[in-house]
Image (cartoon, rainbow, N blue to C red):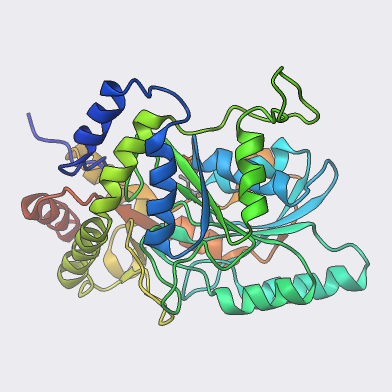
Length: 375
Ligand SMILES: *Cc1c(COP(=O)(O)O)cnc(C)c1O
């Protein structure tokens, strides 16, 4: 049987089990405990921020972030369209409505000019959105400076979905630390994983304290169980935080391995007519969480779907680029500003196997399979 090559699989280091064993030996098998506290501190150091709350998923972190900036039923929230649905689902959990914004060609992320135009128009109509959620896709930061600037100008809180961008930089700093709140994910397919988990970060200590409060059922400080607000059960388990601590040790290695994958793919495949790799914007380091490329079917000879199907037959898992949210049936009523670039990236974009544990032989098998399809 031929070995399957998957898109992005967990890759443990040497220390995770040691931390998990410690959790067992001390019986801290709970959504609180010393690993959770230390993981938060170590995570802050790793990305250069001061406050973090470890939670059960990236989606939970986004839900909390939107609650913390006061999103309520009927509110409007601006959101990138080219992303995974979890960037936007928490907007609807709170009864608010997303307005989507198209990408730019360089970063594949939210186009700052379109954001500015949209906010100017909305200000003119007297109905500004309550928040902006910007995603940093596939390990590349959005162009944050102009996005932060315009959000500040209109006093709209910026939430950064950096679920895919741990280890990336924007002008030397980690994305996720520029807005009012940033979130990260440790899902099984992300650059490091706790099998499932997330982190909410902010420079505002009170906000992070409130996140912890809401994530533990919003229990008032009283000896009996008393609640003045509705919360959630969103804290990260101490066992999983142990895995996270081990994974943080190897974060830089994981980024290097994923960037190496990208370079090897690019060196072998960029020479084919019609193949174009996702650019790396000049404002920072992309982690290349996933190696993405676009296929011009006329020039290459086959289209994206033909490549995907041919590789699937050879047990190689490749995926189309995210389907833009404004094209999702569940969001068909929602407004989108622009959209043609995200649609084009979706129609022609392909994500290659990108795990940090791929071997050179694996990469070569993917390369040969694609090269072979060129007509
Ligand atoms: C994975 C992901 C999330 C959600 O994170 P989970 O930990 O899986 O809940 C949110 N946004 C983006 C862009 C993601 O890739």
